[in-house]
Picture 1 (tube, rainbow, N blue to C red):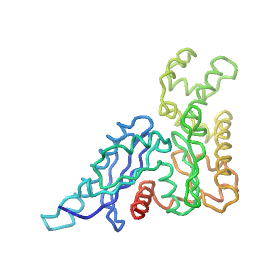
Picture 2: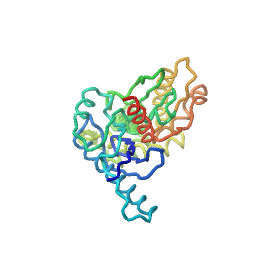
Picture 3: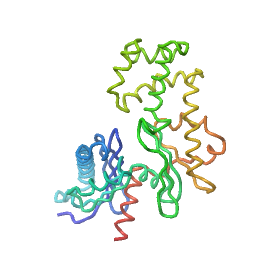
Picture 4: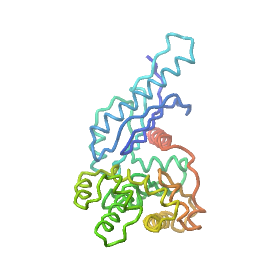
Length: 304
């Protein structure tokens, strides 16, 4: 049996799970991608996604190692040889994290942190710094003096301001005002009605009754061209979101000199609407979130 230890990093979000496998020297050997891994929403689904992604990464690594060796007796990597750092959505909720950590997993070791914290470790390569994620959801964190401090990330619809889900909700609210003739009908309302397949207020309400965050966020693509055209209603919505992100950034950074990383599919969209002071602090990420999860796992494992 191969007695080497390997490191796996997981970036598990509400949409998918990205997995990276490295050897003890940090060389990447394999990758995998699978389904959602939000342990607060569905812990069992998260476990299934994690195992699917890990198995894919191990298979990828074994195929790579086999291609690099002429020795037919090379032993394949197994899950029991892997020290896993799992950055998972929902791990910021203590009860969800505790339930998940009771899992009788097949790994050598498993260390759990939130996906946001893993992203922060990766973004700044373990150094102090702040991260704001704005994609389907939104949240912020700063790592300083050896601890994480979270801001936002309270979940949609009560939180996650500026996120894709929030933008979609704002677009629907605007559309209903237009349908009721409280606001003048405009191109945004027209496009939302086309996306929903109805111009009737009751039908819109009925369709939205079962919407998930992803359903709301799916309306963002029809908003982005209008933002580029400086449509007044769309610009107003994005500016409101940017004001929240600006306040979050100020709270995270305070009077410190830390860098700020903006992550997520909507992050670049908001940058022009942030103040020059905040934009000057924005730096590119040094490592991916799954690499940050590995860095965290190595640190915790070596402290044991």
